[in-house]
Length: 264
Length: 327
Image (tube, rainbow over all chains, first blue to last red; front, side, top):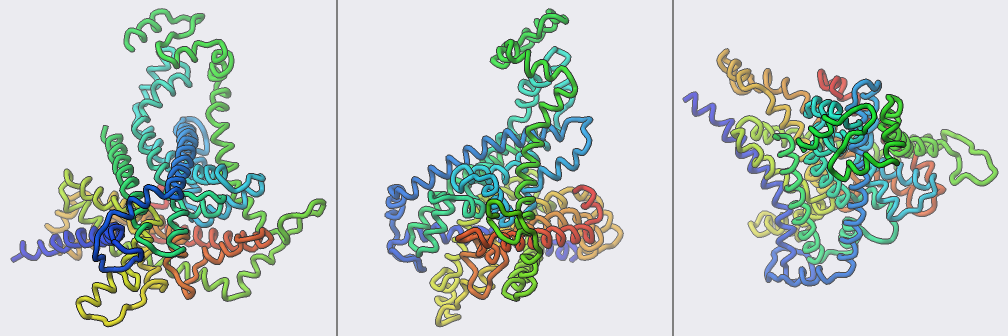
């Protein structure tokens, strides 16, 4: 009798998990299903199925241009935030510098400031330094947003690094800079890789900063937003499905990399 | 590598620089490098300059700079400042907020929505995190987590859009309810507080999962066994053992979710209606068009930033215990 009762919480929790998974996935599956609807309005039930919307999307100049623009911004922002993030992490991890807690708090600031406020403050900031809205401003905004995540990932990996590796390199005659490039950087490899993919996804997904910092050229989220506001059609679903599948695949790969870097 | 290191060790002396075999070596041995960076890292101060300059400039200019500029502009009586005129500072921009209810109601609404969404998320996600952290076997945990993380990569806009698919008048839920005969005409769910709340919870719930999971997973199993041996039932074990020990995860998860939720923007525009204007929309209205209304917008943004961070800080202080020390 007792074992029967003690199994009730276990069963209930298992059901919670699957119900939650269903809750997470159902809206996305519905959205994907709608992209196959053979009509130019969005409504259930789906009725006739077609692949026509995909054919339309891959020929849509606006969509392709937005993809290209988003990828370009993501690449630039990722490169900048990786270099800065690793640099800041190195500064925090070095022994014998006072105020490391303050530097760490400062580095994490953009991650705790709510997205909307961050976007507004950056909008004001770029106008005070006379930087026009547009590509450079978006890249700057995305970089500010991504750096804290790289810092945290790099620091986690640095804390697990045996300190005698660098000592050994120094004993063998490498100066600190050479030791960094030949020992520390390769050790950080998996964390940097994971951090970079995370930055790419953050940048491609970002709406609010791009909304306030962007010019007339649309990024992917801006395009989807404009289309959703302009009126629904299964074309948006096809677009979103493509973006979703690509980002989910990249995200899973990043997850795999960070997992590996933690265990090795 | 080993031969190379042996060589450089063998031939190392005060006069000859170390030898490397790669492209880094070519750079490290070049005259330019040895006279500049190579010389700099010889001294402690040189190393410090090399290591700290760029991070310090970046952190001060771009993490503090924007907030500082926003604070400064929020006190200006007119913007942009005319040439030749001294800037005059005022508190009037802040006073506007307290004078009109169309301004402070959205902030209160923002807080209510964010707190309710955080609480809902906590209640919904806690059992799931507990299931993954304690009931799933250690070998299966990664897979159980990864399944939940897939939607996480879909992004803010796509997830919001998928909520529209579910809740629209001819969306899945209404069509389903009609088909099973519960309703005759669709219930308007979109552009109401319900759709906004649903969308916010859907958007942020996964931020709660990882902090909760990592603190629950760390609780040693033998503590629960000990409690069970001493006669504690499942509920007592949960209340006296699991809940206190997962406090850190609860506090950091709630803080993260609350701060994310209060800064959400696109979801408000797409899922909210005229009766559910939240504070980010109010702020953004000052930044459309000409820049002469920026000081008021900046003041409002400061009000939101300070109130959000203060309430998160108070929450962490009250509920925190050990967690505040970690932060």
